[in-house]
Image (tube, rainbow, N blue to C red; front, side, top):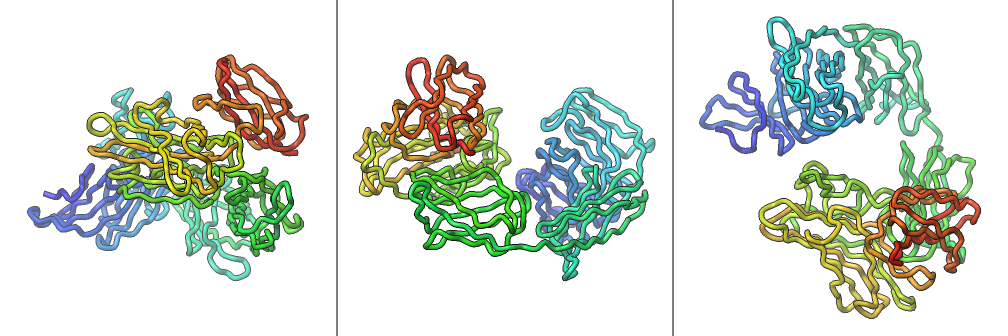
Length: 615
């Protein structure tokens, strides 16, 4: 008996067991020569950490795996030394579609694999470190992408050579395969000047999905099922892209193509972060530049200036922010050596969309599910969203604070066995008329044993004491969705110069699935405009934001109105009636600046969003 971990699928040869531990995300190799006393020889994680199936080749030196997850890979491993298992390659069929591999079998240096919704797939694994798809038949053309439909089992071992397929909807399907050897393309990418290997170079056969990314040794391996003459594109961060034309691929052979890339010339980029009104420099502001290939970050000096010493020309998204100012994220811009210094202006205000780390404090003693500032990875429990799958639209970046973000099943990284706490930096709410703290919150609580009994507790602190302003539980409205929350500080305590927001999510015995999230925090003075009476449940989004003045309001109440106000409260656009769908706004003639968009319902309740119109 071997019960160290749950075994979902196993393969035995001689006195050795190869076991797939689906819920633990790895396979193990066990010596079972003495069945009464199995000996663990080695373990290995698989590409998507949900090891459903394992299969050995005839030599016993190579093992192949499937992970039963969306967009998962088939993996190959050198298991010739069970105590030192080596990863060789991974391959994904129909990339980006969401299709899920189920079971794979080895036959005569081919893998025959069942894929939900995609059908039967054949890989040539003559070279286990460079697997190539050479055959495919879709048994369920009415189903595509993610989901558990179609082929979930294929058997390739009959003397006839026919493939016996089990299709969930169609039943038995019999196929006659035409096995063809692959055309392999392999080589090394190096620096034209130093001759050093180039890491993270992408090598693509133009017009195909066949590609690979080099490692630290600069080596790559890919291929295709059809012989012919192809162009090969090679791209790497920091290098001039290369295109090699007329590369001949031959069936059953390896074509070696070594490529040298010309390094790009970097340049120093200077800039300054200033206050949008006074023009004064802002020290200690965070500045980030990012593109598809590059990412840079720095902090402004005492005089507000910053320098990035080695930047490559590209189109960059720019972020800049500091607690006490609103984060700026102007439209992406082309930055070259001729661009000149950047000037980034920040508006004063207490606001945080979590695009940058502005100093929130994380604590708590739960076993899992601690607060993290990341792009949310959605999870689902019984068809209901558990962890959010995205942040709130209309702010800078795509990050939010979420309780655990490991993806997978709903229970993989939710809050377990304790509490997790998120505490804001201090903010000064004195001298404001009708000061409100506003943010979007997410809470989900379900599953487990008995009725869910967990909470999200929201508190305000004034520097010496704290008060609970809201307790959200499984019976609160809108669980499993982003809800706008607005707190009138004076309803709970006198505003001070040392205030904080504290958000606690707890998992109480006997334990349930519990997730929380926070996004788009801000401190606003409601009476600076004529827009009052924030309603927590007027839901809508604005896209794009920032814009040139032409944008859409998605959602909002049926029969309500949309109005744009300037900083003085003056109406500059609208009101226009909403019908709960998508409302197009054309405010391209009101000029660049920051405005408040007001959405009201038929009862007079209103909520506002800050929008930015750029030239």
